[in-house]
Length: 271
Length: 197
Image (tube, rainbow over all chains, first blue to last red):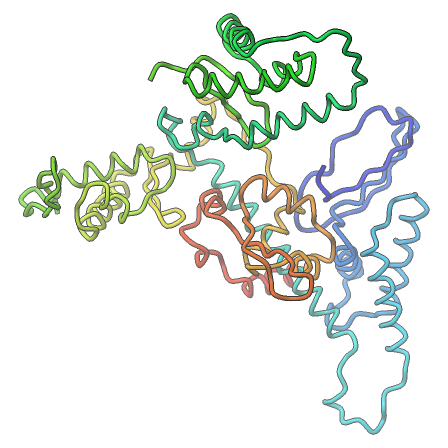
């Protein structure tokens, strides 16, 4: 789940409506009740965080970012925050921090200026916030630029994959990938209450033969499933070793489509 | 311009090698760029062919001109410090129709913003990203790492020794960039951002 939108639904929620589409520029928060069901949906638009909300309020009121009416914007900000809380949204701590900063800023603006201070030395208490907002806005624009670049690049195609490509998943599975899978299954086994009544011995040779047959008949074997079929911890170890053995003898090859994805074994193509 | 009569290029005296003419070198270079599964540079090609790098550079320049003049379906571009042959973007509709492919899922806005901060501020730590974005971005960083668009660049010698992140070669490839300097200056976004709305 991405963190660019938040959606809350009442517990009875059955379906999720389409997520807000990505438009980098303006964002509009919307509260809409779904007529078909009694779920109340709150979409926080693209309000990523406090800076986004603040920018939105400033743009909405069309106030000069260099001369923010702190009192007004703070009130609006707090109203939004309250609304979010009323709607039982998990208001991120970041929002509260910003609220505190705004209130502090508001009170500092109310303080009379030191009449003795030289005009130029008086720094606008809002300067820091304005700089942060401007910086933030720049990176929003940069994100937009990246977005359009990616769109253009998606229209460009390279040649199709060929056998020798380095990203050939067959070489991508290392011992550690295998161990990770093994560990997962071991952990799962631990949770089960085991009642081993008689010791069932499966020899390494038998296990190798079993795997060999599975690969031969099914074409490919999901290693996760293969390991899960083991009835005991010992059998599991034997199963794991037989996979290693068959790989070593170059009888099977292992492929993994994505990192931490499932590993499948199939008959190795004759070299 | 055709280097038909060009003098043969000196090849190293390694077993099985022979002298390669400029015309031949151009052809071979094109073949290698084509079969490479990621952008390759002239240094690498020169090493494989055991020829001088300037000769390969020349061959590539000549190829670039050819591709430009031909205005065909393919383009030869410099990406991530190497060269790559790809289809032209304007033909994407037809290529997609043939490949039956749809534009793949784009990055979320949160991920893109995080990526933008990392691209411009690298090496950058998570707290520094938080400062600019005003919001935590753990899932965005995980997504970017999973997609290999960013890589860890060691730890910053400061309180807590936070991990620093930077963009990867994959980032350059996926965003069609020759190198990082090809990114528009972040200051250019100032007016753009201000002009909005």
